[in-house]
Length: 311
Image 1 (tube, rainbow, N blue to C red):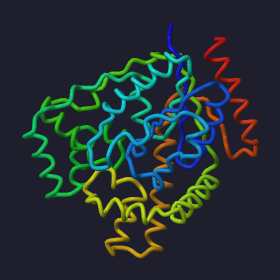
Image 2 (image 1 turned 90 degrees about the vertical axis):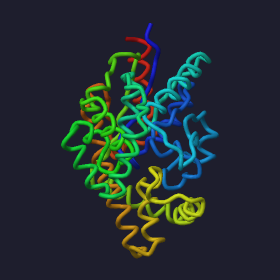
Image 3 (image 1 turned 30 degrees about the horizontal axis):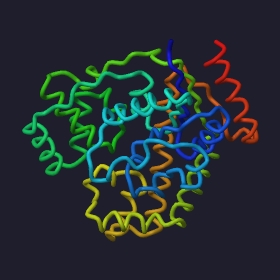
């Protein structure tokens, strides 16, 4: 019999964390973060990580599992997620996958089979050297030529995955995207997608950015910088962290930094929604419809119970 798995997905700032906590408390669930930046320790404010108070309301997993300077792949995430899901299910709880990183989500729900990690140090070093000499734009142009489908999946700033894909392309002569196989219908799956009208979401994003700054985002980035991290590290390419680094290095004013974070966050939200809306399994809820949160939570609980337990 297929094991149950719930997922809550959607663009940034739409309310996924709040709903996940409400739902976990309703159905005896446990939350698994599905966010490629919340895996990093000491990156709390800029990643909108659940606060200690929120984490105390329901069990949370896959937060703070990696140092910011340590390489971490989607295959690494999948392996850890599977282990947590198995543990949660064995204890009679329901796993709830929550976040906006589309590739992490699909790797788990569709049980992607990944190509084993390439061991060619020579090729890896070659592409890293090309990146440092010619820059991100050149790398992304090469990936656009060799594997445009994978470029669409990872977005324009994910240099780590772009370099790995180019390495695999050169080593095998095949696009990396063709080497990821998936098994659909692997779970008894219920997926909730949250969205709100664009203007309302953009206002929410702008408010969130201001709130992050008030909570100490600049100080958080300063501490990371003092520990030796810079914009060459994948973790520091996260929206918010990169822009604050530019401000600290004197490249932009504070006002421009804020504007850049808000703009990049809006662009990211658009890419997230574009990714998830291709998945026909998602049951979409408009969190900007005026419905109270307890009503939204109840609707989702009824939907999930019908899908998972009574279908």
